[in-house]
Image (tube, rainbow, N blue to C red):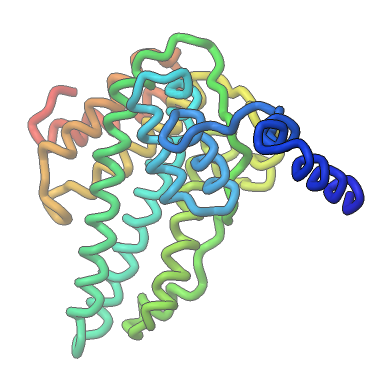
Length: 284
């Protein structure tokens, strides 16, 4: 390799600038230009594989809510990440709410963190609703393609959060670490449902053995609709108290179920959503 490189440099020096451009230039395909859909897709894919779900989600949302050829490929993974991360933040907020009640001398530090996590979950749910409305409710194919492999993470409880629920104050670096683990856990929960093994991540991971796997549409829709229903509780009167937002999430979840064949799982989920809608004055 060294000899070949020296030979090329010598040839370019003798032949002048034009030959330098021809002989030394790349003859392979040009990489995607920054800002192009293909470039954004590459960033999303690499971020996802590195476990950086926030960056992956942001880029996938741009594609899913756009009109490029990557929109339909990006949407299923964005829904997986968006709902999973929102669930992770909601669960984190619940742990810090418990911590605030346990630490009567300094509950404020826990409530501040709880509020921050709920705000993150709110932003993700709003973003994900847009993708559901633009993409999922229009899918007609029998199979949904998942372009990325099974996400990193575990279904296990995050042991370090026991410190929070006991009312013990955590350092910022500790909070960052448990937050990452909880976000991964939320994404794995949704991915396991999509794979048809909600309580067995190992079995679900085996179903995601390769990229571009396909899952039955009704299985995917049931998983996402169930996640939207669970996320809607964030906006109940005892939490963020945003009935309009709760109504939007439940309505989109219920609408998506209309394309799913009748089954006990579908019936049970639809009844839960209808009950939640009635509480906020929506149509069940």
